[in-house]
Length: 259
Figure 1: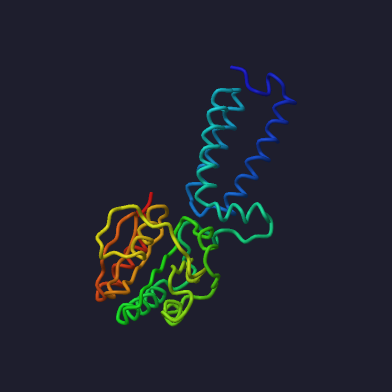
Figure 2: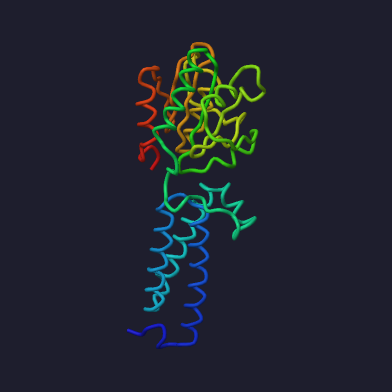
């Protein structure tokens, strides 16, 4: 069997340098953009297979790996479009999409965070104040947050209740929460096209709609009844006040909601 360097050593070295530069940039870009461990594993595996194919001069394998890698990169870019745009605008100064780990960010006290959300939701439910609160998980919602009003403030029950108070101009849309920060308010989602009972209003339809296109968790409080529901993976489940904290924690810690 002929190795690549047996045919043309100069060409092999140039190709190797070129491949290292390309894959180095792709790995750098994925670390900046994607929150999924799978994306990094994919690009590293692709690099190893491509390098082996180059060494053994297996052109069909290199072509196949290139096509599969391109498809995976397109899917990754599509699912992180907001972060991709920011990366392209300023690739070397923007903070990474995560803080030294993959998946849902856990740089805060989750128990305290869940309790804060419970306090807000129970208060909104008791006063029959309509609300829709969406919690970003692995799929970025930054593109959607741009159609609302920037908040960029730490989560607090008081702030959430104030945002959804009927006297404010922000109460009609959804709040998007990233980590323990409220990114934006008055965000409008594309509603689901599923046939629903007439008792479900526009907030419930919007909550299901966003859960159909992302792995976000959305809490809805009905303005008419004060009923609490949680939308995930295209489904809407009612939750009573006494069990809200336990159920909400389960949804937020479920890594298999959208795989």
